Image (tube, rainbow, N blue to C red):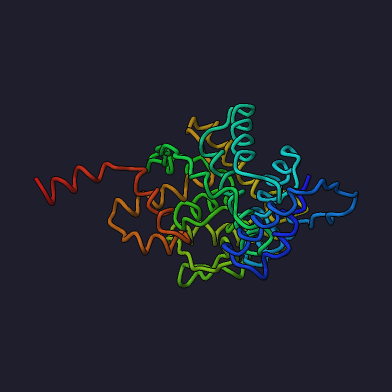
Length: 326
């Protein structure tokens, strides 16, 4: 019965002792208290703080997007509810059992399980950094190896077919802007008319972590975007709005649905916003754009993320081999 008391004492001393001293204190308490029969009175150990909300507040302060915060929150909440233990009592084996059960129950892939492991690691590492726990129980759970799936890009023919099939100038402007700028769909729906610099064919978008960057578009996009804006009679500041009154800023889901309908009608596989971004990145790499410049253009924090696009299309490897080696 003395184990929770020892844990409580050691955790309370964390701000004042280093790891070695905390270990020595735990050994002494184990030795001394083992000689006594102890009973824990209700309320002896204080109620555990709301670590989840404290963690989410810290992540928000660091610049995490609302979407990421919701994902972190829902993932951790499900974990804590199912595991049914106080945060400070959770150990490595409990986490391993949870991940194994989750994968089996939901038939989840390795990528999904590793995403959960990554979020748990971030949560417990934060607890360790804040001196709420001695050591993160996720440390011994290593990154789950996931295979790399080659993802599709649009062919030049598919892009032209989609452009030719557009009845609405708005849809044509959306397709052109996604295809020529490589911006994220969330960045595009947040744009206002005044954000567009038609003279320099560029605009500033607010990306992940509230970081601003400049993106560029081609002459065709400029013409179609101006044509769309000239025909509008509403006063909404949004760059793209709904087709019918009352006009309002179009949502991410609205654009995704619209693009999906084009794919079904034209028999083009997997038409979604991110595929335009991947297509631009792949074409840029094939044409020799330095990876560092592409990283800046796409707004990637880590170059490893950008390198994934380099693996999408490897047809240039053979020509490079012929040029430099054969």
